[in-house]
Image 1 (cartoon, one colour):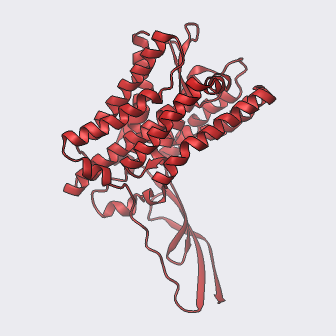
Image 2: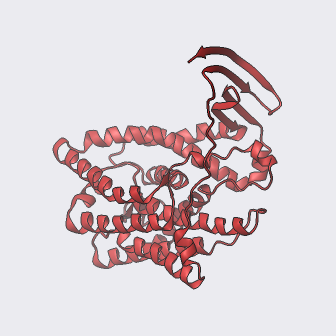
Image 3: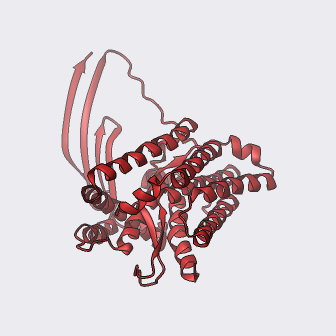
Length: 377
């Protein structure tokens, strides 16, 4: 273990979780005018509930053992080829979305909103059936986002490039953290505890986890080469994406709770204190350093969640107790507001489908399809 390992640790995992956590925040709108400019789709994201959390270890075990059996009885060549194609295609969209998030983070959201916006919508009466919007820079980022997947797919080497594997894996992790949202600290604790025992069993109790992780050459893991040139001549350390995404989702929840505390006290501004987020992120990094240290000392694979799960849970418990907020934090639920349900009244129903295509600035609206259908029920 050397200094390069620590540098790669903080740059790979820390940056991914940091950006992914902020990507999970609801849109921080300062005034009502912003509601019309940026649509908040936070209500469309399903939360992981306590009932779901109990199923994660079971589903994970079934998937892991299924992959192990496929490798044992059918060989690794075709499964690597099949999954490689799948992850390459998915990687195009994942890298594209991640590059957009990174671009917005670098230039700032205010400058991003000044870029030309294109919108395509389909209406049913006054309700949106489909709404797609994009800004001009996203079109320029698309061809660049295809390059990593293309190079990964058409690689002729016996082992895929470590740099490309990590790039695709980090993009998957970033997007997963933006989408996978835990609904409460109770659910997060159940999830981390269940996967704590899951990881111990499949790493120490059997050879299944290590066999699958080392056999599958696809972007579902992070590789840390012990060389700044990304050469594997000195070997590398491996970490599964689950060891990033699951604790990362808990850390993202801590950030959303920090935002909830801020928003409860003030309805303006975008900068807020983040004690739970910073403590949990620091605890995660400390747990990961412990994992690598123990692995280096014993020279044997370690279940990362053996160290990461307690680190994340204890960071929340200690911080909340020290701040006198444990009860409030434990009972808090990160539930999005429910969309209002429209009621149909009467026996006569009129359906009107309108497709509006907006090219360029918002004020340029060009209807391309307009039709109406009336039916009596």
